[in-house]
Every structure is written in structure tokens, then in C-alpha cells.
Image (cartoon, rainbow, N blue to C red; front, top):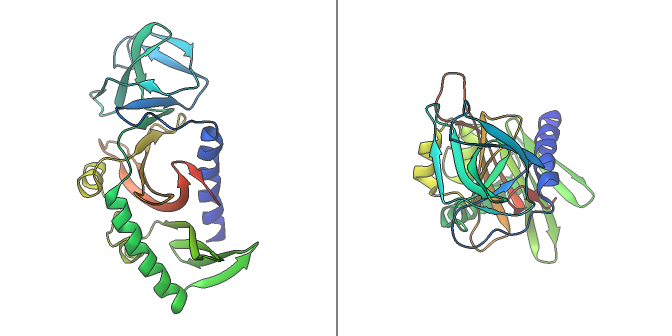
Length: 243
């Protein structure tokens, strides 16, 4: 379990290291932030079309429209340095909506479920290091800090549908992306790692809290939609966990 958690932390750290200098996006509209220094700008929303590899600006780029190709991958229409074209989804963070009320409701449910485990940690192991207390069980883990303001949530992760349902009030594991969107609404952000186009990360920043609900999906071979394989809840903005 410790090895699994370290892998999760490493994954989040990589995203965080990519985004440390990312400014807040504009409040309205759909915007893209390149997570790589250079990307291919295509003539059409098609991987077989002509392209030019260009330097990416370190700022948010307006996305007036987004489309899906025949394989159901997203493409973003942009204008960069006077050039019009299309960016594929991998290597891009897309700002979609605002803070999430659905995520706020889920977080309230989480707080109650987390407290139950703290009151009676049967089946969970507990350890403390540098002021952070970790509760672990097979398929799930959460971390908290005790301070003057009481318990502060730091991080939660699970790949188990039972733990997901118990802590979040809804079993998101193995759901398709359309099912997630139907339940939670529009994400605050979505992104796909540059070197793993089959992964999609939907981030729902919690309304009224400095917390983010992150839904990680992977598209299996032959599939058209990502399937949820892990859910995380962490303190901080999208991909900027405050551990």
C-alpha cells in the first residue's frame, strides 16, 4: 500500500511541478494552458493533417471551440503568434467551468465519513510523520493535519468502489466519462498528460474550499471513453496539492 501511495504522490508531484508557474485562468470562457514548451499545431483537427511544431506561450490561450475526431479525442481551436490551428488534447490543461457545487456536496459527505474512521479506525492503520497523520487500508488512504482550527484535510485517494462510495457518497470507480459528467457536471479543468493520451484527469475545484476533487480516467484499447480508475481529493488548486 505504501508503494501505491508513493506512486500516486509522484504522479501528482509531476503534475504539480508542471503547473507551479501557471497563473489563474480568466474567469469566463474556455481556455487552454500548454503543459509543454513546444507542441504541434495542426492545420485541422486530425492527426494526419499537416502541422508545425511551435513554441508555446506561458499563458492561457483562448479556445473558441473544441471538437472530437473520429477516435473521440479532443482538439482545441487556437490562435498562437498569429497562427490559427488545432492542438490535440495531450499536453494541454483546459479550463472549462467554475468552482463545483457538486464537489462541495461530495466534500461535506467526505468529512463525515473520514471522521467516522478517525473515531473508530477498525481495518485502518494509522501513522504520524512531521505532523501529518495518515490512515491507510487496502485500496484507500487519507491524510489529515491537526491544528488550532481542528482537523484539516490534506489528501485522499482510492481505487476501490466501496471506499469511494463510503467516503464520497457515490461510487465513481469504473464509471465512463459521460456518466461522471452527468453526475458531477462540468469540470473546472481537464487535462491529458503529453506522453499518455489515453489518460484524462477531470478536476472539480470545491466551491467555498481550497480543495480539489480529481477523477482519473484511462481509455482501454478499443474503447471510446475513459473509465475511472482512481479518485483523489486534495488540498489546493488543480494539480497543485498543498501537502
